[in-house]
Length: 453
Image (cartoon, rainbow, N blue to C red; front, top):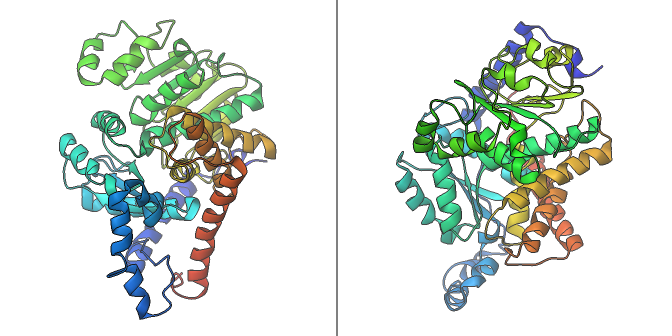
């Protein structure tokens, strides 16, 4: 019996959902944050500071001045990224500002280090103006090997990502868009393999047209789903060419406008129930409101339907209700249900691969390679209705995924450094395993104090 077939009570779920917040309020002030910097070079004695700092440090400085690409060899730029936000769309909290966003940015940086071996620095910018944000982020380029954009409200997040990807020569990645899309695609590939359907044949209904589902729809099309087979639904109903607010979309949210023109070949209108009629797949990134997706709608989906209800902390439909309505595979954003659709499966390894080959950007093809590798790993372990995507505990997935990303960048000729595949795997495995081992060593030796409970 799977987790989804043993429904807890609503009270138990609500109490469980509250527990992490209770513990967070105890542990955050106890540790006063979650990340720190520690040396990575040997310090044999105080004389070594003459090497690492003045006067010795002048030699690598001059070498970089004469040969700018040497910055990748003499400094930590090749393993350093910035996690940049303006605090305008933080988790489900909304626009809480840059200071209040820092706990999230530190948490993201912690996961980058532990699961990807990537040194990540949180940078919360004190601006809500997109042009100021773009200008400030571009000024960071000399110090970092990549930029992870985080928790920026739409529609400005679309233009910020596009501008920075165009203007910067290091990878720029918005996890709320590209990371979510990658992991949804990974879960979908695994689920479709399990039920015996293919990307180029399925009908997909998508609830929510925010940053996550907008990018997901675009990546699905890039991965081979016919655009006409996708139907999107926002709070006003289904997107289709004849909607009255189409002109307003073109002026204010051209990404949504483009999808309205491209998708919904049958030109269906109405509510999300109409989109789910006969659909093979339901992908929802909407409000954390169980019951938002109705059982009666799921009952009208195709045989062996797939439902990904990804809102956090509560899914748009409880997994057991989707199962009772006939869904074959159900995924959510929660770790206590089967098939967790979790961005942490993606961004640490995607950046690991991009940094290792010194990629100049992160392309859709690199994201598709990451998603396909995750699905391949799940298939190798044995696909089941409760296992169509790996879990975070399977740390070996991260170097394998990183290699898929890095080799795709090399294939696309956007890598500054080329590797043989086996050498890249050995390198990624070593650096990720070292991050996990160093953290454990710091805990074992008391340099990270034990939690008080």
